[in-house]
Length: 374
Image 1 (cartoon, rainbow, N blue to C red):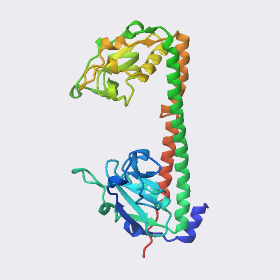
Image 2: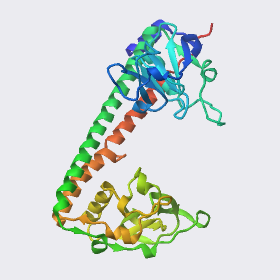
Image 3: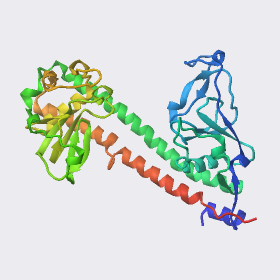
Image 4: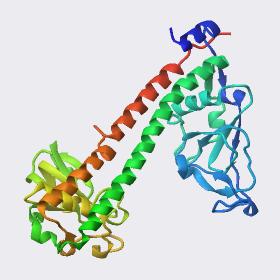
């Protein structure tokens, strides 16, 4: 029998009391910060964070010299990222997009934090005007409150899961920085090599592209590609092999929130929003893909409202291309980093996802109690 089982058997064998949130907490909404107490940057005088809605470090709004919340508390995002829950153990000043829970009774705040995380996607906020979570929407939420030792043991178990996930996330961040460093270093070292253009090293297959409206597509299992990846699955194909697709138009050419060059293999259909290139060697295709995704393409893009990378401008991009063995060496190095940083089946993202699912499973299990009848 685990320590938690022993505590439950000893302290609450017949269930636990469920109390409304406002029984255990004062619930207050953030407010505006007076201009004389606000700074956009941290200074010796203004060192207390002003917190808004937003996930993790994106919740930092500015700095002040006057804390409104002094003791450990829980914040819940009231707008935008509605429901996002954070544990705060430092003084801060909340603004209007936050709800703050400060305890009125003795409890494990970390226990309550994990409970609120378990319901952060369940708030029924009306989709009218500017959707907003308010105190009346949460004050009657029933929360199980077992004896304090049980709360503390549950918090300890769940904290272990979140700490491991945080460690893995920090490692992933470090590996991504390392990946960017080596990518920039390897490509900068190639800058002294004679540059080539895409039309001299690849066959352009754009003429075979064929857009099909959504209403005319026959459903199937063949990927239908557009400017930024798969947009549908269809019954037939127009390409079969290994290709490099490069975005021809769309806002992502400027925003670069997803790669503008991506390798595809097998039977595919491509519309007229992505260029289609075929290479003789895998290493060359992958090298070009990585290089294009690492450079600023703004000089080659036309149109402000509708950004476009036409075929002529695509062919004008100068690519420093070393000999094939060196291409392969660079690709091998960067592929290993890419797998570690981005592969959702084998890399760190897969391990982080597995740990998160494990945490959610045990959270659900540990926070479910039979209600004690009075």
